[in-house]
Length: 467
Ligand SMILES: *Cc1c(COP(=O)(O)O)cnc(C)c1O
Image 1 (cartoon, rainbow, N blue to C red):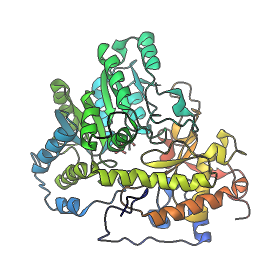
Image 2: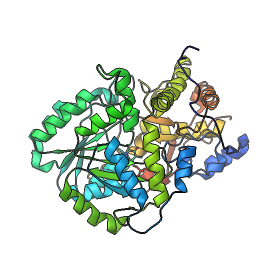
Image 3: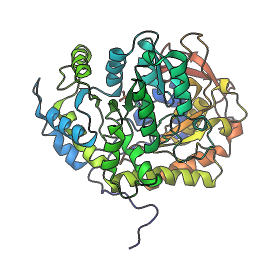
């Protein structure tokens, strides 16, 4: 048979997990109880859970078998050596330090390299990444291309770095105040947008000419490699594995959240080529995570991560994954729902500002929309807008990011196309009653990473008028 545009799931289902469904009144009570913050809902009260693709992956039979091979020795576990060998083969970095998840690696990297007063350029911020940079006294500078902040700009590599902005920062503060550039592949908050190989090479040349390290945020590197194969001249005949390897050949190391593209439920690591930096990283990991041969992970988790990396670069898997996102996006687009374009690698980002154009950004349109979608359908999503962006550390004023979105994040290998049909219908139904949705105001605002645990009140008497 001919290949179809949307091929069925490239796996069959061996084990199932039942999902709960709550009635309308129960959902209304649950979201109110959660302070209109979808992070504070109970999982069992959600129907289709698109909160995040982080750690929500379904592991394969091979990964589950790998758990049984866990060598839980305190030091020198064989699973560490397996993971190290896989990372060297696929990523190409010399040294690897496992950590409990991505932010553990961010903590070590930031503490080792940043002095107060430094600057870290990056292609748009990520919440925990910027937090660790600022915590160590650096100022984050966004050097992504302007178009990345425009939801409608349809570019193949919307995650690219603007070399002029990077050069301008070097001219302004001096290269000695820039220990590294953080290069995210793909860019989560821009909508899962990829960076081209051409841009990676150019960034690397400019950085290295100035003695600045290139540290990748490798979290979704396999999705980025898929887009390079799909869209960039000269890469059509290369394997995903070759492309991943080439991307990293231009860098000095990476932080990795294994909970994303390693297709596991927990884990992460830090990589680098510099021996001295590795030695200093091992000195830190023992303080915060554990021995350098487990870094806060069980042996079995390292085994699952090693196997997950080898599965993630299989073309059937990664093309299916990215196509699921495209499928959902095309359904919503046909109904006129405003979204960040082009569709990214891990999620659909609905443009909440355009969706709820009767609200100002200070009435938290994305937070309201995520709450309303849960209330009407049981589908859980998250806010990526003014709440996630937080306050400026110096002025204390809210950042007002241009992108005010809800993220419909697709967990890896968990939901089928039929689930996505349901999600699309739920969003479209809500779009038709969008004028009835109320804005929100703070009830409790946490000091740091406020989107995780903050709570809200509705501005109008009801979240959705008459629902
Ligand atoms: C998830 C994520 C991180 C942090 O990783 P954790 O495993 O959640 O600590 C860092 N960068 C990006 C782009 C991410 O998506």
